[in-house]
Image (tube, rainbow, N blue to C red):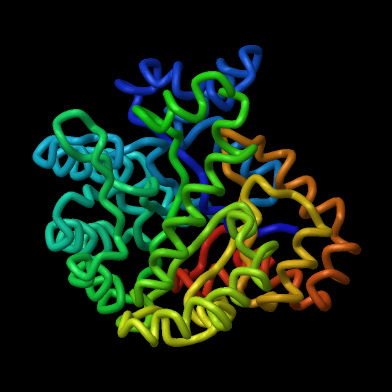
Length: 350
């Protein structure tokens, strides 16, 4: 399929790319590190060639992990966010028919995060923001700011006002969490367990603490076909509805007002990034509907030719899984065009 839109695609500014080798080594095989480093610091050039070869018409880039969320100092985090947003804007400005970007944001101050998001959307033409999960804070880096607290409503309200989505993306375990759970089992960091576990917790916090109830038009994106939440949806909802809600009501506590599935059908989108399984796509589609699923790759952690190759080469089975030829096109391109309000781009009508 030509004209696919892909938007969990990472970059790092060249000055920091080589210093991130240790972080990359958590996910990238040693023999593949040079390819990774070449791609992550060059959004244009070779990556544009890969897009051409694999039918990707438009790519939305985002700052790689841990990004600004890994900076504990508020002032430094805010400055770095502005710097990297300006950098990626200048990198892609001559290729806007092929490339866009998500804003990187410091989440130390919700109001300031909203202001930087507004600048990026209105002045730089960005498509929303990608957050690498919770914000690290504190002098020792062991404080974590999660965005389900009411103090973050000023940020979520700005997202609704601008009508742009937020991509909640994983980041690697660090500090005491790393030392306690992963130091002696590093092979579980990232896609095997830690990514989905952390983002699922954060997402469920947003739901159960009423963020979507207070901001019913808010749009959130989860990668990797929903960070495993869909696979435990029945059991989670059963306990929220049949056990936790009566307990909360009896104690005068407040929690989410609607069944869990409501938020996945009205507020949350999931992508195929790094999860190239037709069987899983069918499972998620049966729950949420094809209009809540979007194609993506997760490069350079995953290879473009693998993710795009799966979507193209398994077209017949994906078409059946998604409900028909139109739904196949929708997931590959049309849903993203609506969500990000994309105009004409390379192969947008192919």
